[in-house]
Image (cartoon, rainbow over all chains, first blue to last red; front, side, top):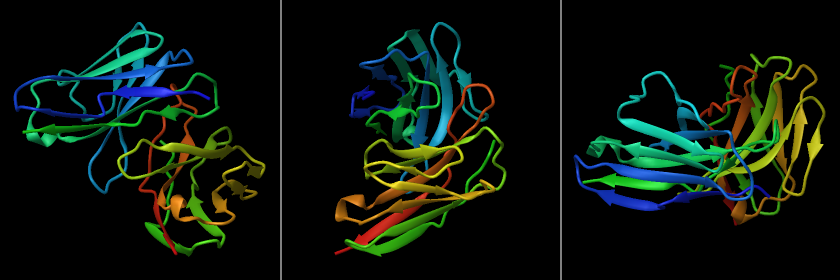
Length: 115
Length: 111
């Protein structure tokens, strides 16, 4: 089945630094990937849609300059949290789907802690 | 975006069937209904999806109302490993087919 790998699974960074999270589709090509953020005890909130070879589409209220998304190949999308602050601490999850209407596969998530 | 409404939490005894309801009264004619579940500190896991007819797979069954304004995920025999948050999602037909998650139902399975 479709596998999505997310790396790292956990990261701790200092306030003011940037952190990059990778999302890879291992056995299929994904022209579209999605990035979500999830705070404790809350549901997933869609942040942006990552489109291969073009600019990402951000949801309302998500700062595009703070959450940089790059989707340079059909199997890799990256999310960079720039100038991270403690309030950016969260669980970040990506998803991708290779087949129309067959559902999306989610990565295992990245726990970001900004200290 | 089409929205879903689910109870915040439910409990079930182990080995008994569980029926998890979802209301989606604003569903459009071509929206698919997807169910995912999420264990703590993990990404959501696909459970089942359907359009109009009831669906069965090795994990669960999906019963879709005739007017498609509601659906029910059925776990035939709940186990402790089924304890998770279950999300009912409508796959929107606009643009990129993105998923918008509702609050989900936290299922507790009692031994």
